[in-house]
Each structure stands twice: as structure tokens, then as C-alpha cells.
Amino acid sequence: METPLDRTATALSKVPIRHTEDGTPVCLDLAICLDLALAALSAIGPDMDQLRQRITELGGDRTVRVLPAKFVTDAMARIPDSLPRDFS
Image 1: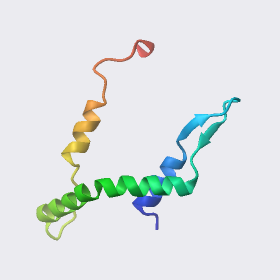
Image 2: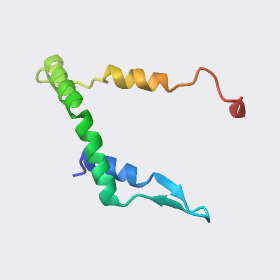
Image 3: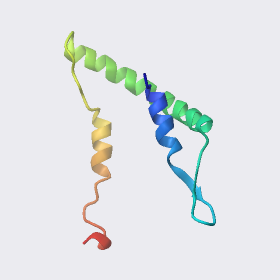
């Protein structure tokens, strides 16, 4: 079973950190990606615990899915007010 740590590390391992002179992407080693993923998940751990507690309070015994307001707010903030000139 794939854990959030596995999924995060896998996603990070696909992000090029630079390109060689011939244009080949260079990615981080999986061990480094695991360290970065663990650090990232540790940073949001308290928020996730608080979210799980809130979901339990709302749902009781039934399954409930709730998007954290911060994630929604951050996603909305990344939407540009207008398209870049290249896309107009």
C-alpha cells in the first residue's frame, strides 16, 4: 500500500532541479526525496491531525470529506486575474 510519504517522494523525484548542458533534466535521488517528503509531511502534521479531528466531529460514524479552507484559499490565490499575453 502506497503511503502519503511514498506518493510525495515519488512526485518530488520527478521534478528536475536543473538541466545538463545538453538539456537533460537532473532529478534528486529517491533517498533525498524521501527526506524532503518526510520534512514536508512533518510540517503539515499538526494541521492534518486537526483536520482529522474536525472530520470526526462532523461525521461521527459516517464518512465525510472536507477540504481545508487554507487549501481552497491558496488554490484560489494561484488563479491569475487575467491570462498572460502569450495565452490571450
